[in-house]
Image (cartoon, rainbow, N blue to C red; front, side, top):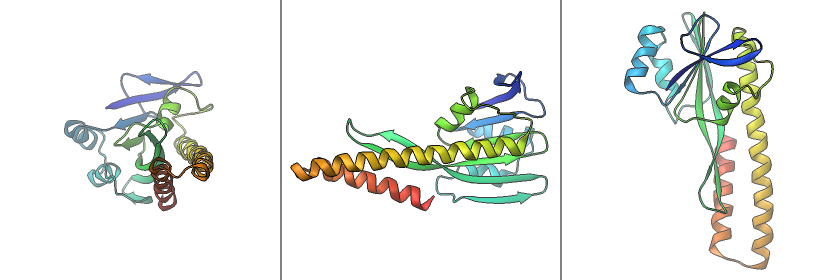
Length: 185
């Protein structure tokens, strides 16, 4: 899905047609949408493919008049009533002369918060500032999820002292797996 956003009257709003200074949000694009990004906007095909690679590691790369920033974003997924899995997903940020693109395989709260106006002072036409606000929001979610992992770990440890069931061990393993994802990101 490709959506266009622009700051109007100090609020981020979705617009029907992009114009210079827009943020273009791309989530789980189809093959046709990928082709559109490459042909219509002149994006480097390698940059687009890297942004959609689940195994891609964080980095910055520059090619001609485009800059690619790939950063892992923290995400969470409820597995059972008592278990939440935390993991990371690459987010590609491509900066061109006219636009800032965000490209990812999965929708995430960071993009929602920017699109819904939850983050104050977002100016899509100020590309560097926009990217810094995006990175700050990603960092904030890492911290929030780390606090949730710590709290859940303490609760599970307390329950384990009173009874040793497979459920508690599975929850601890899921939390440990989440921390591995975060530390490698």
